[in-house]
Length: 342
Picture 1: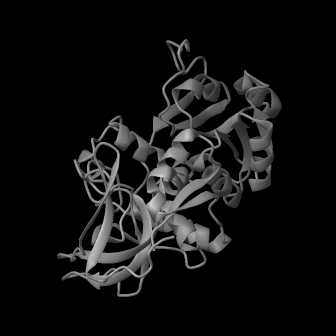
Picture 2: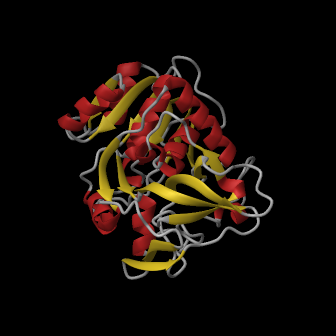
Picture 3: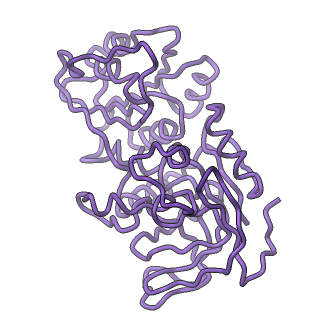
């Protein structure tokens, strides 16, 4: 079980380097415009597996404390802090200093769990620029799932503008991003069509709010099926798989629609990618990088208003952090994989 009686001057953290290693150390002290939190929960994303494997575009700093997603209680303030107080329950935006506006390469290169220590520790330092207060109705486990999967789904649907009332949103996949996208699309008033890979998952997606679910193992040309079903296609496609499904996502797109590529999965062996990914369609294909702190705060207001609750598959004890990584890697999860810290 998580150790809730950790000595106040001592900390325990996991570090990346040949897998996960665990060590005890002195409790960190906040510097100027930093806060120290007692971490209560953290969650694992596929980017964390990529950082461990060395396949993420931004290499992990040797010995870094991993995980971009975590939540905790502020227990100490550094000089100059005005955006949080002692006792506040906060998380952090994925990018340390991206507050608002267009992202730059400089802000993209500063990430918790990659080159800033993340949240797989009993205590964590959070830069003031990235402080985000979490919705009060969420548990610690739920609040620890927002920074990456939650925000990327929100950004996919709300940037550069909100879906029109009654717009069709197509979600591809059944990972955490796709689940968030279904929930957000419904509270934004959209019709949701979801693509998945099994009947069991299809039933769970319907229960989550998807209006129509297509099993791609039964309907291989699901892009054409979406077009035939709707007559005009989907205005917003959130593809949480990646290149293996891009061609079908494009086929499902309405005129002047947007395909947002979230997934980083490589094509399976033998897959032939089209020379022209647009085919005969007139639409936009884009990739996005999670979102800004301002977008995060807007998402949290929507979550609070609609009392939305993230989908959690399984919660692991702090001592079993490596098992949480392995479980996410297995592909067996439906919803977020969370680690209870304290």
